[in-house]
Amino acid sequence: MGGPGDPPEGTPEGGPGGGEDEYRSVVFDESFVRAARLQEYSAQERMGDHAPAVRRRPTLRRGLTRQLLILALLLAVAFGTAIYMGVRHPYGSPQARRSAEALRMTVIPLAPQGKVPGAADAELLYAHSPAAQFEVGAAGIPLPATRSTPHFSDSQVTAALSIARTYLVRSSLDPDVLTGRQFRPARALLDSEQLDQFDQSFDHPAADGRHAPTGWLVRLDPSRAQLADDRVRVQGTLQADEADAATLEVSADTIFVYALRRTGAADDAPVSLFTVRRETTFHFDRDDLRVGQLQLVTSYTQAGPMSCAEDATSYLHPLLAGETARTGGPAGTDPYATDSATALCGTLAAGAQPTR
View (cartoon, rainbow, N blue to C red):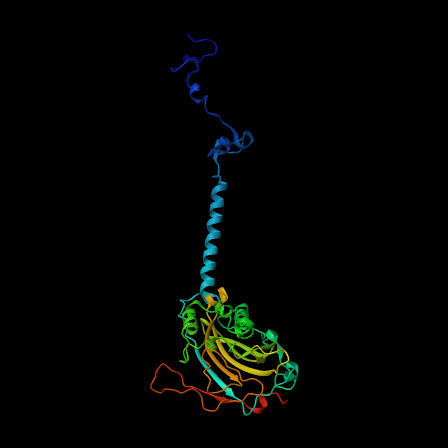
């Protein structure tokens, strides 16, 4: 017979505590209660007619699930935006890169009509020449106002103009480049696909319209002339436009006027002016703009006073104060040689020289 605290049927099988022992290890804390799907109504709520004893609680949304949903939504929006911008971006998406063009070059010596004027002072010569109003150095090649094109942004156009200007400065104003001691400052700006042509031009110069060092830069014969004034007078213009949807084109028309005297001459030796006009065309694809390089695709150079009989392939050979052009025409041209360029020569107009 059971004791006072036992149920009438006695203690169930399984031990002194009966079936309750099965649940003694379960802790019904607050989180367990809140997670229950069924909830008992309160006494006040059960007083209503036909109110059930329990009600079903709404399923709780876990915080982690909500965060995952938000993250998935954000990723979907970002992915969709990226696709939209790739399709609709006004400057297009990157295209397969084309091979760089080979440089086509022309160098034309300009022979003087009589003796080359000279003076003891370079400033005096400049003041009485067409270069009197030119700027000194790089200031003579100002950057124009820029605007975007259908496929290139304003910043890309500005970058192309700046790189082209830097090339003109390095290849036409650097004293080491002018005297033939160096060419790397200009080479460093070239597209990598043009380096073989550039190197071959200096290793094996040829008058073929492709491999003349004087087509790449201004290079004065160091055995003949030296700078009498490093304040070179310059006047130039730059213009940018699209060659096609993948290529920016910059055209430059620049005049450089150098004050020269004979190599090794005393500082009071007569000075003369030497003029080089360079008309150049540069191309830029998006890779060039990204790394700060260019493709020089055309170079048209006129230089004088020079003798037409001189070979202007490797160096420009200026005529100096008091000298006259050698008799004879330009270097011979072989019409049967398909890889040679036609030799050209011009006459330097009297008005292009100082008046005293």
